[in-house]
Length: 204
Image (cartoon, rainbow, N blue to C red):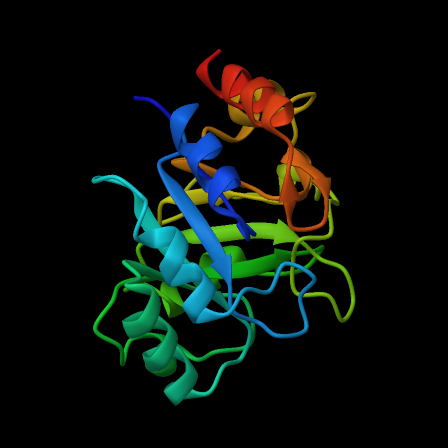
């Protein structure tokens, strides 16, 4: 079965279309205002209007207000939520869209417990832990910390790029991978050549 790919931190229509052209299954918009990849829901909507069928549109949040999730979902016509903060299962599940929960992996963290706690999520996104930074750091975590019997679909993130994606997929056997900084020229601006090289690695 092929590994799905989400390209996150999209801020420009040309980057979204490059990601889709070369094989991305989903694109992500960061609706956390403190992020260098932040995009307004109105700007996201302009991009979404150009996107063809069968591509998932993901909104990324960090401890958002309920009203913000509802507003961005409606304006940008999202298909999925991705929560990167300390959101409770009850918070994540109250919206009309399905969700995935991001966990920043470090030694001593019980990922099986998290999978049980967020059992209604459509996937568990595992990212690198960096203090006070909820994601997009470009750092890789120790993939050996991922349990074999994780009860939710595994979405691998954290420091992925063309140079390590083949090994990452071989070792972790994920349902999907999530890339942002690994295909960028600068924060929020994607590099088409890096996207192509990354997608070629995934297909290997």
